[in-house]
Image 1 (cartoon, one colour):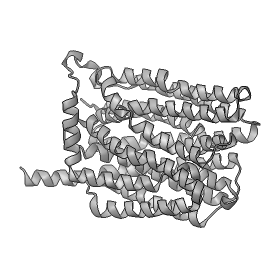
Image 2 (cartoon, rainbow, N blue to C red):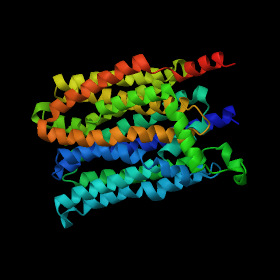
Image 3 (cartoon, rainbow, N blue to C red):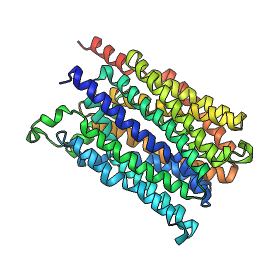
Image 4 (tube, one colour):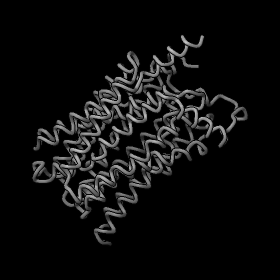
Length: 424
């Protein structure tokens, strides 16, 4: 099924496609660009906190619909690309248009319009996120998946670093909010080219007989959900990820902190440029954690990610200014790499049955509750008690996540080997 030539070609296509997507994502990063833009339009801490809640919830909860919309393996590549082109990317252009027409309505309408467009964008991504992960698992073999994904998202993060610097430059040189409109329009065109690139992927499923495919029933889905949730190591993994998500629900507030006098009073362009360090950190981490994960297991990446959360929050609590802003975002990049690359591979490898997409979906649905609630509650808490106490609370959760991962989460490959020895 997988020839060396096919694997190499697919890897190059994914590197190019994800690289372009990383560039456009950094141009309009929710943690920096959207946060400071909404602040410019008068948003409070609750709205800033809702960015993380919307991003988390709307990329997870809608995944269950993707199981039905994209059940066909034969046409999955085509359908995923078309979905991006017609249901995801248009919202980048809509956001740009909202900014261009800001003089025709109030700042309140502008910020709510931008937040709604962002919500629609994330919801559209959420519908296909689990399917996209399953498609990657289908394209690349387990023994090399971590390395190839690491290379792919290394390119995405590296291009993201460039995108962050470009965004900071445009904001500093173009007066007013029109700079942000330019960013959204460039991001839309870059995203379009990115998705067109994936037409070059060679998918073995395209040659299969469509009539041989059977859709998964509700009964099968619920049975698969139950099998996944009964697995003890999978439950331990979910607890670790829940604690980690509670400990890192404040990413948009970091930009607001460094913008404030306590954080050094940095300008919008400086903060957005510092955001490039986040994608650079993610780039190096993706390359490293992917390879280490293939050799030693992806639990290592989860441990690294939770440890870096502790480091990041500790830095924020004791430091301020441009240098520490750069260091903070670099550390955040490592955390993000772990929460996506290592998390995805752990999620795939902890599957105790054949319905991998159902396993991905139920895992993400369980995680959706704290991922949605925690950023919003952090925003409410920040308005009442200030940002610093929220950072301290998140540090406690991050320490608990690190300890839990060390003591309770097992490497799924070793668990499976143990099971085989016990049950020949």
